[in-house]
Image (cartoon, rainbow, N blue to C red):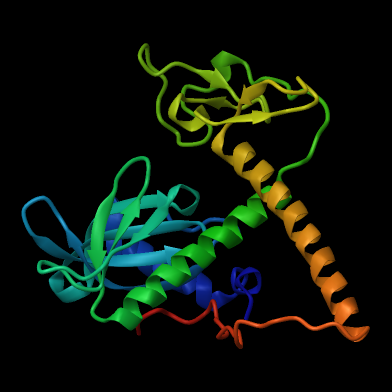
Length: 261
C-alpha cells in the first residue's frame, strides 16, 4: 500500500492516536492531514553521561522520539524533528557502541544504535526514503511562479512561519524572496537565483523554496540522463555494445509495515 493511500486508512489513524495517548497530556498532537506512521521501534540514544533506551516513531514527515517508562506502555519527554531537517551519517562500529549512526538536525544532533546491522540499515533506509518522499511532495505542492511573491507583513506573525521560533529583539524577521513568508535567520540562510528578480544575484530563500529549486534541478538532470540512456539503448539495438558493472536490483518496501514489531 502506498504511503499516500495509507494516510486515509482507519489503521493509520488508530496507530497515530495510540502514539499520542502513550505520551500523555504532555505530548503534542501528532495527527495531521496526510501524515502516516511509517514505523516504530526501540533504539539506544547516547546521552551526555550514559546511553539510554528511547522509543522512536517514524512518520512520513517527522521523526518523534521519547523516553520509555512503565515497561514501554508510556513515554515521556517527546521530541519532534522534521524530516526535511534531518541528515544521517553512517558510522563504523567502535569499542563503545556498535550498529550506530549520527542523526543531525539544526536543533539537535545525537548518536543512536540498533540491535543489529540489519535493523540499523532498515532504520537509515526508511528515514532517508521517507524524507525524500516528503521533500518531493512538498516541492510538487509549491506553486512555481515567475512573479515576485507578496511579502507577509511583519505584524502578521510573531513566530517563524517555517520552524515556529518566536521573533525577539535578537531573533529578527526576514522575508523569503521565493514565497514571501516571514522566517528567522536560521531558516533563511540559503540563497538561490530567482531569475524573475535578478538574472544572477542569489536571493534569500527559506529551506522549502531552496529544496524546491534543488529538486527541480535534479529532475532536469535526471531527464538529461534518461535521454543519454535512451541513446545508448538505441546504439545497442543498432549493434553497439555497452559494458556492465553487474546486476542491480532493489528490494520492495512496504510503507504500512513497522520497522520492528
